Length: 335
Image (cartoon, rainbow, N blue to C red):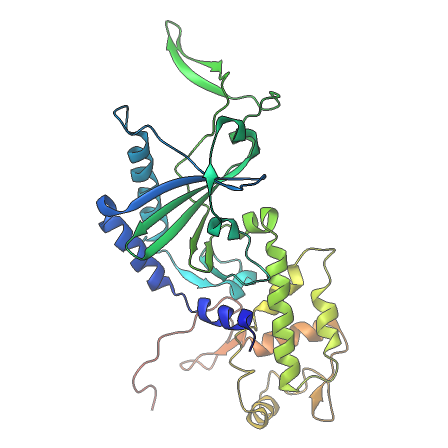
């Protein structure tokens, strides 16, 4: 196993409970929690620390810390905040996806760099804000993406306004000084070598997430090939390359990255397939291997390995469970 693969295996074990426990530790100890704010820019040094006036004033730094911590707790530590592996990205669930980084995909590696100091001249170059929280050896980054409308530039291509009160009521006036608009939102979390995101389309549009998807899809195909149940594995590789550059089909392949079916003994697997009313004869077999003649058969194979169809113990009814979650085991069962 390579260093990269070892790193992926270790970082991929981050769980939703660990994430929530870390957030709880930070929020409970907010008074003792270290807090720094950095701007991520296009030019070097890409990580630039923001300095705040600490002697008197309106305590903007503390207000910002309280605001971001509140957002962190309300959004990412809510009772209904659910975390799943990024391999389930094709399910389009309203969940937080845990994305382990690697040497091949680490779009926020800039957070590990030695920072410079942010200055006014860096405003037009800013692409995001990173909030750093630290309690003892526990560390979390909260990332807020800066869209172009939030970063006015000196050439006046973007117009910003603010509200002032007058005798006519509240009116808008142009903001003449360049500013960065910081809002109460967190687009991504970074914990160790993991990125946590609910809006994966931001990653796809701004951080090359399609590269991660294709890397995982290729790794999945390698696992299927190693199992030795497919005669023409190249059909799988052709399948994930479809989509005019979009990773639609590679995302579907990721559904079987952690397939329990692939981990079965091969002889038992074939025995179970052949006695299954749904799967026996569904995909053409030749010399003890599946032959994938069409992309429809590729998707049938994905459904088989993903255990998409589930039968009820009570009614013996079969259900389509494309989006599913492994249930907690129970003692006993139907006798």
